Length: 505
Image 1 (cartoon, rainbow, N blue to C red):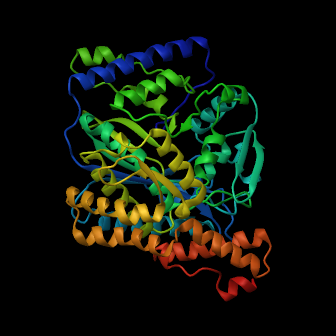
Image 2 (cartoon, rainbow, N blue to C red; image 1 turned 90 degrees about the vertical axis):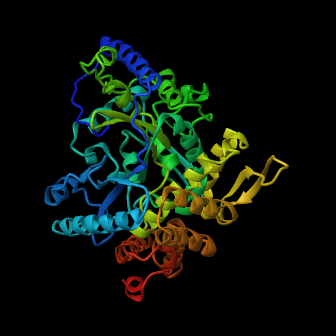
Image 3 (cartoon, rainbow, N blue to C red; image 1 turned 60 degrees about the vertical axis):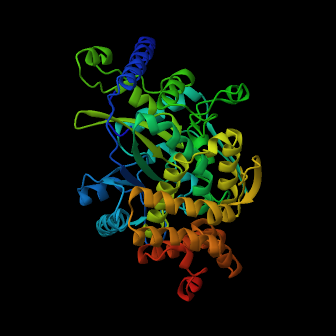
């Protein structure tokens, strides 16, 4: 979806042609897999972070065009709404001091962007959902002025045929409607990429699915939306509902949402791309001139443009990605589970935990996905989103007796997943100093039972108890969050509550 998309209205012939091209692309992918044309292992990882623009008052600023002009860097680009930006970090080889290097690059990039945003009285806030967003901020007139976003919105709205319903029942209950997909823009995330060979793809994807609940439990950072306290990680239900092309009748029939966890463990990357064609109508039936099978017959590498575009409109939490670098095709797993923030150290700790855990789980002689029903992994994901670091999961029992048991997230991470992450980072060749620093952050979150969501909620309630109104408490919490975020110490060290001056303000 990052490519520039320009098209007008679509007619029936566009959709028929697109479906034909999708099938050709899928056959092209199958041939590439059969002919073993994919890149060899390079242990490459990549990182994208979606960001919010907010003023010194903590309120969103619809200024991404002006801010991007001032930043003037290809590393930064627009996101869905005018208060969003995205920063992309160049791929790195996993190993050595990679996490320290990533942290330093991010610090430099975000500090520069924050300075440039300051020129128009805005600033960068790295958070899952900006607590001060109001319904009037998330309307189609605040979508970024970019063809692909306008077109995507128009097509999703047309497919649904009626207003979108947001209904999230958490600590409090939010119900409202939207005429556009703009509420999706509230969700700002971290995307972690890992280039993998076709032979390893299924194991890595399955491992990422199994680990997703633990990632959310440790990293939850989105407890508020439109003034309501909802789930500890409210992005997944919000994202699903704000992009849902299904009216209630299709939901009742069991038609799959375009944002979903999945429904089965897989045997190859092909399975996911094939599901995309089988389950999802085209949203953007834009056809490329390339004949992918003719390109293959001539010994070339096809772009598979329709397959790539269609894949970009199916919002899996672990998404397959087909790409070409230096004329050689490759596959990536894109992990889309984590919210942005709270600090760069926290983001890198989350990344180290993820890359370590999936390496170890993917290479386990008794893979977790052979011992855990997929339905349990999906239920774990929902529990993590609802309850964050206090969630309880179903997980395979250790030892020879088999079966599953119930375990709280903190115990699972400390007793089982952190040792696996350590072994996985060792297998990647990550320096022990990097490994211990960043996994130590995850361990401290467990020990103190603190993550971004728990800090936001505790600080908000402290402000309410001090006599603030809800709106004032949310704004003060956001300002304090931004201040501590820019100071950079990890969230488990943050003092709960507002400084005296904020409480009096």
